[in-house]
Image (cartoon, rainbow, N blue to C red; front, side, top):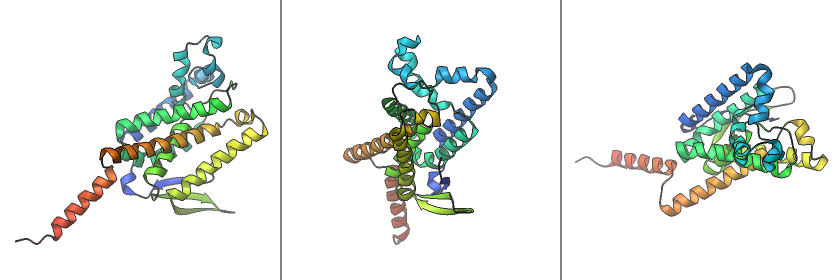
Length: 256
């Protein structure tokens, strides 16, 4: 559903980190397990996918509150097809490294899961009677995009985008690429609400999970930045800049 395809973070410091690569690996393993589950695949999605109506009324489906709450996390590692998986993992690989570097590995891992859960809850709030399992890492990755916009708005993304009869490459700043991406998600989500409450289910895309994850990711990053500044804690980029300035000053200092 995305007309722009990010291919690479042009900043070398934004290379995928350990946690990002681990998340990509886990998603690939889970998808492989789905493929080999055969006729049990639909059952796996039904059990571990996030179903809004079941979440709000677990006893009616024979589940405990904990059992439905845990699907906020398990659903993030299931995907509806190869293109769904590849698209999500591409975005995670391109944008995740920078966010992981800024937040730190442990916080980033928690952040990823929490953004996914918040995205699913946004979807459930608007479609509380939906019985369609919501699966995929889109909410988590949308949160990563929101964080990237806050933490590195000037970052350059090498992007593939369509022309009338061909494709073209361009280096777009995050402050341009990401608002366009969010606008497309919001527009699709708005149309799904304006036309009929079940259109989103038929289309199979939880647009509002994308919007919810993005907004939460951006807010979380803003709060974290403010907290660190008030506490006098330097961000990795600020610390690196000061260290580079110190080294440069040492080089220029006359030697007696």
